[in-house]
Amino acid sequence: MNGSVLNLFSDRGTLTAKDVTPWQTFSGKGMKFHLQSFDWEGCACISYLTMRAFLGLMKMETIICTPYSKDLPLFSYDLINAIGKRTLLVEVYDTQVAPADLSPLQSVKESYRDLKEKSMKPNWYDTLRLSPSTCKVGPASRLSSLATEMTTAYIDLFATARKVDPVAKTARNREYVEGLISNGGPAINTIRQMLGSEAAETLFRRFLFGIER
Image 1 (cartoon, rainbow, N blue to C red):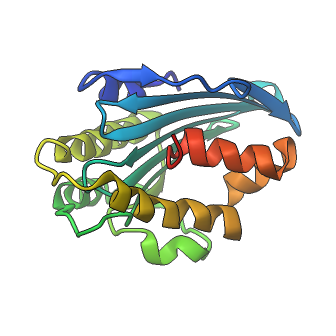
Image 2: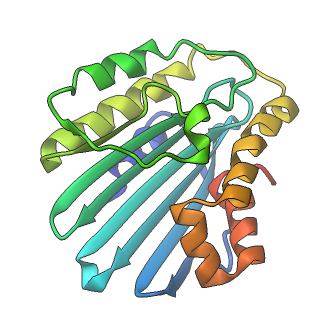
């Protein structure tokens, strides 16, 4: 868990770091978080969040790509290592102005059918969660390969993606982000308890998803 997926983005374009003060690191409830946020090539906000808990027995790495000038879905990657058990969650959310062809991502998902699919609890955002999304458990090497292939397939879409009015695209992104803030979810609930509602909501809007700049 060393930012290798983040490197896939930096290898294909410039990551310009944002000042995330005062939330470079924050702690609570036995967890320590480290946050970085970037603008990527003038077309997307990319955030990188890591967490350690229970003396390192639990680790999590999260990368979120929120396009704002290319009409592509929001992409989220989570790798969780809990006492040696690894879970990979790759989610693609419909925040597009018009649909895009996501068949390359679907093909990657299908090629890893041998890995066990972990069932997800029903949630408010299920209607926005697109079919290439997947949650897998398995050996580290296979999960790493899946993460690399899925992220690479997603990055490849930017080369031919439609340019879109950033105002219209951000409005679509905002529907998802404000839904998270209003309806809750594991991450926003935890961070809200640690930082308070106002700080947590600012962190989500400005740095995790970049809908406010």
